[in-house]
Image (cartoon, rainbow, N blue to C red; front, side, top):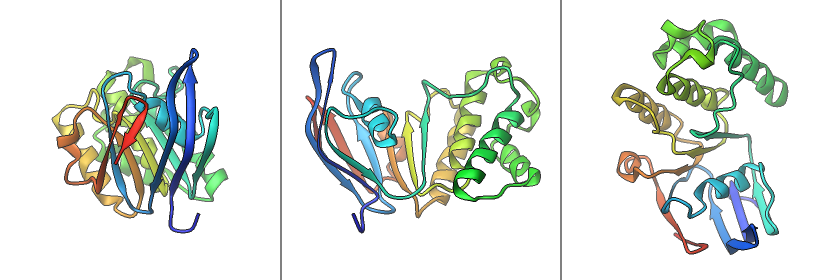
Length: 205
């Protein structure tokens, strides 16, 4: 798989006996930024979960090369009773153990300030607005500079300020391979290197 960050080969998946994907194949090279488009229900979220290894395909092969982070605006995967700082510190410890990437509190606080979350750093997650929760989850996704980043609707619930921070941060990670599922392709047109449309169980690049 040299020269490929993400590879899908003849992938098929059914949901409640209805085919969602059939013989779907895709190769994404290191550093590419793929916009994944399609109508609601086309399977974009499911495809990202397949790439992330969260679910398994019925048939076919999926390979990823490099450290990987996954973001979904519909499932932020926080501990709601813990504060932002506690959640991010826990995640930092996990990726330090998995990847050997070391963090200190000052690095973490600097990122929290950059995402304009310093005013709510000690608030429990379930007390935050949806925009604040999404900012915190996006911040977490970028921690440790993963080589592959998968984003499911990353601009959801972000205000203008949050969107600007997101776009600037995406641009700073120019060497990372990214797949961005979105209903706002114009927002990411300066970042994307190619676009794919998921329609009728097929992927057009």
